Length: 300
Image (cartoon, rainbow, N blue to C red; front, side, top):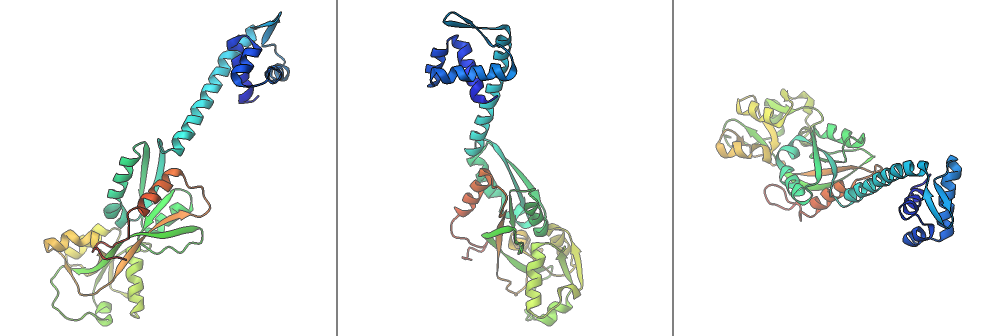
């Protein structure tokens, strides 16, 4: 039984006439008759009485008419749902973002997305860069936004924005130069393994010949907990300018003269999984933000 057969049966039943149904469906009379005959033959039931040149529904035909109409209505509803998904009138977008991007950079962009596509439900999950990449890789998220470096052959990644890491402490700096020896001797407050912030500063330290794992460090699970610990005098930390900006302005944190440069934010997408139109729309919105700039306004 096919949807075409059901449509033909309903058209004949509503008109009580094969020729009229064929004309309405833009089919030949023989094609309509064959479709009805196929239904009757397959299920061994008579749907119409042939009375002279006319036809009349049998009891079985009357019962089947209601069922056929319901099936066609559901099929039309399903088709409308697919149309809505394709046209972004409805659907769900699953985004996973690392802490810095999710808390500070991404919300205004998602707010704009919601204004453009109010029928799309946004499902935002949080995690560090490593966790976000795992969710995209495992199909638990359609799109990832992270600040760390991701080296995974199944994931496509490209820059969508940037910030800067700033080395901070609770006391004003005394103008001494900062070198590798000082960085190795000072106490640190650091993010957990898998964090994009941690991987970025680790790369800087390794380039200076330091072993990041040998540092005297307090490890904390979030940007906010690191910032609060540094404000309490627990040590120095490298944090996003987005995270420490208000504290620097308030004087509860002080920047150290050590340039860590810009740090790109990356979008992640699985190379082989189907990308829903809702995800494509967010990618287009990110690309439409213009020339990428870091939070200081400098081109990256």
